[in-house]
Image (cartoon, rainbow, N blue to C red; front, top):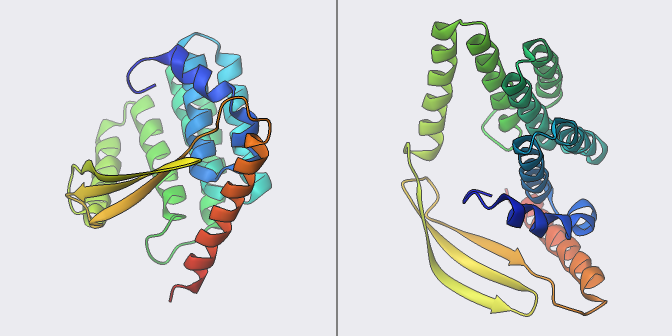
Length: 220
């Protein structure tokens, strides 16, 4: 998608929708549905784009993933602005503010994104109403927050090691310019023609999620 290969991106996702819907974590659901929604919008199929974002927002509520619902509301606000439907953006902001109130934060964490999405939507509205000074002020504050968190305006990523496993690829990624020196990326893959691959992968994803959650909960 980032390379402009819209047909290829959509084809890769459509075949994997059942797995994405039932066996993946928040970031995978978010990225997949946003790509499909933007591809639909690019093709002029606005009804499908909004349906996809509506599904993502409702799925966030159903799973207790406030950040998914908030991200979907932010994307819908951006979509409405592109369509010139500025009156609908205020409703997106209302939903974001309710989500922010339901997810209070004392320090920066994953829920902080919900508050940032609401702030960014306020900037969208200010731009739509030609209140450019207000928009600049809002965006400048978000930039200052980003710099305080990540330590740089630009972060460079480079793969330093790879490991191939039967059902996944794991890469160690070096982070230059950020607070974290490294991270690990795991990409799951399905085999070809094996009927049990789908259920096997769902089980492995569920196990990975349980282990990650257990480690997180054990941390002081």
